[in-house]
Every structure is written in structure tokens, then in C-alpha cells.
Amino acid sequence: MRPRNAFSLIEVLVAIAIIAVLIALLLPTLIYTRDAARTTLCAANLKQVGMAWSQYLDDYQVFPQHELSPDWNYGGVHFVGQQPVLASDRPINRYLADEKDSASRPVALLYRCPSDRGIYERGGSPKNPGSSILGGRTCFETFGNSYRANPYLLDAVLAGVEPRLHRPLRRHEVWVAESRLLTIADAAWYYATRPEKDPQSRLDAAWHHAPDSGNMLAADGSVRFMRFEPGETDRYAVLPRPGLPAK
Image (cartoon, rainbow, N blue to C red):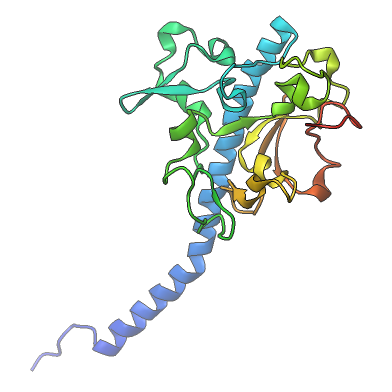
């Protein structure tokens, strides 16, 4: 009788075990590589949006303010069906594309962080966040924007510069170094910097691989990944004037 050319059951089980071990070893690396790619794309988006923000500031010498939800509506999209389209009423959008290109999907998606998971209650982790307060929707789907602006630049009363007049700050009213001043960032920055007594301190929007972290656009146009913690404030500033009490 001729011998049969086949694997035994033990050989098959050993091969499966080896493959399982290799997958277990490689999976963390693959996940980290994917997350790093998303973080890099997010930074590139902020860089492009930041160029439009800077051009607006150069032209008007004041920060871009929208009457409704200025933190989100300085730029961003609205949706026509499922299609994101640059919103014509948001101040910096005309510096990203003209009217005929407003429906360009690549341009519209500059406002979407690829890691955007929305806003949720603290207690989870970036991979397994707590309960969503947006009904499971992302910030981009909810506000047309993943990147929240610094409200102290958009409201002089909030910044402590004016007693009553809610207006955007003028360029000369900012006294901190532009390389430190946070202008726009992943939404995590806002919730990570809330005082403990603020109910919103119980919320989170950390989408990347570290808690209370995200990409930040500084006023000088630089983008860097930051941990938004009290101990890190020597590396970035939110208030435009040191020593002024914020509202």
C-alpha cells in the first residue's frame, strides 16, 4: 500500500496554535499602527483647517466667531442627505474652498477626526468609552465638526477681557506666546480642562490611544499631540491673558 500524503490531527493543531500565537503577538502592533495612522491624519486635518483660520485672522484681525455655538461653528459642514457639505455661514470655510468646491468630500472631511467617537461619560477608556451623550453619534455627525475651538478666544466676556460685550477677541488682545495658545483641538481638551465642580468634567472625548489626549492646533499654526492635564499647562495655554479671571 502507498503511504497517504496528509497531515495528522496533531500537526494541524500545532499549526493552528502557532498561527494563533503569531496573531496574538502581531495584533497590538497592528492596532497601534492603525491608531498612529489615524492620529497622523487628524493632525494633517487640523493643519489644513488651521491655515484657513490663520487667513481669516490675517484679513480681519479678530478671531472667527459664529453667533450660534461658536466653539463648533467657526467652520464645519452640514449634511445634504448623507453628504457632508461645507456650511456657507461658517466664517473660515471660504478660505478652504470656493462655493463650487463646497461639496467636495475630501475638503468637507477635513473637519472629521478619523478617531471621532463623540462625547461620552467618564469611566470607560478610549477603546471602550462610557455611555454616549450624543446618542451614539460622533461630534462630526452632530456638530458638523470634530474639532472644538477655544471659547476664550471667541468671547471677550468669557475671557475676562470685556465686562459685557460678547465679541471675538482681537489679535492684539492675546498676550501669551502663539506657540502655546490653543486655538482648535480634538474635543478631549475641553472636558479634560473643566474644573472639578463643573458638571462637564464628568464627560470625555478622548479618541486616541491615551486618556485626556488629542491633537492641538496652536496659534502659530503648529500641530502637536498633547495630554490635556493641569500639569501640562506649561506646554499649552487656554486663557489668552495670564492672570485674568475667566468666567
